[in-house]
Image (tube, rainbow, N blue to C red; front, side):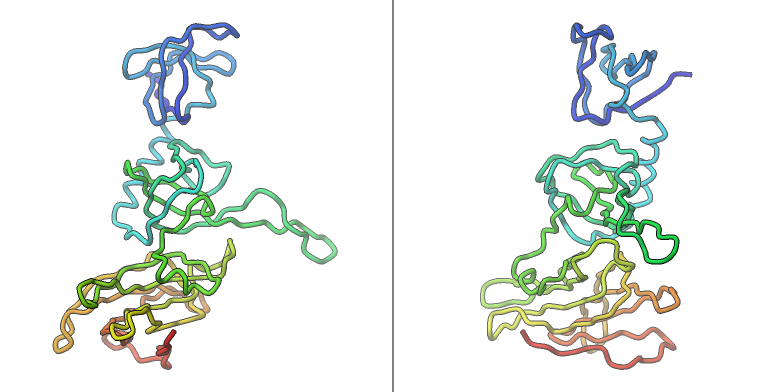
Length: 303
């Protein structure tokens, strides 16, 4: 049974022999499928799809199992709604799981445009400060990771600090030192001869490893008379979980309105969904049948 592997380097040379002096027999690039013909020390002899044969360093190859892991990740993520667009800050690897030491296959160039689907965390691998007590042990340092989809449709995990969220500057300037983790255009309003988007923005403290994906939600609406954004709604202290979904729904006399659903956990870790509607500039909860209204959380605040 033939052994299949995939190239994880941006580009690699195939050589005719395992020696300091060799001739080039071909090249392979990131993601290429190759057949493994043999192995010797740190090298594997492979045949590319184009028929070129030669030796390649084994560290530039990943197994069929790793490739299948990425395929499953892409399949499982097909229905996940996009949480935000982003741009890679540096060249970076796509990992099959969160974590610096996990397997990686595809590589993204600096400036690649990606879409963010989900957040995860993983230990950095370096111990933190010891905890107090008779038997101190290192406290793990957690890092945030994003599950992203690249322009070629590959899905994988990247270190969150390697991606800048491409949030609109008009609302990002109101983040007040908080980290924007997701944002959505709810609708557009007319101001003279232009259309202006209105946004839902989810934020958190600028720290990695928090036990929630977001703890603050804000809705920015456009004041047509003053030609500026204002905070129409703000909710804090959420134990929020991505993904958030945005859609439209008909509300009879109010007509068709933007709707968003936040997924939050209670103190016992139970997950529930909260639906909201925007009838500019008012945001209100939409209660499910039988759901009792909680204490008011909407706050009309101008900025």
